[in-house]
Image (cartoon, rainbow, N blue to C red; front, side):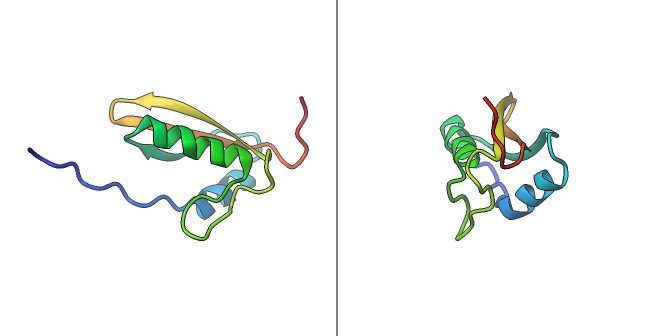
Length: 88
């Protein structure tokens, strides 16, 4: 059985910086083979929880939105920076 090549590590700090530089614009953050992992990562982005090694780039909580896109190879996370003011 042939194994798939490992995917590169996601630089969440660079992704968060890119999102902050373009407020309101949806940008791809990462691709995951496992939907459950993508769901957990998207939730961490929305809630400002730590992602990556020793990294908390998506603060403050609620400043980012995240959504999932299903691809042929798995699930892609798209996110956007909406700022510190969260309106209902």
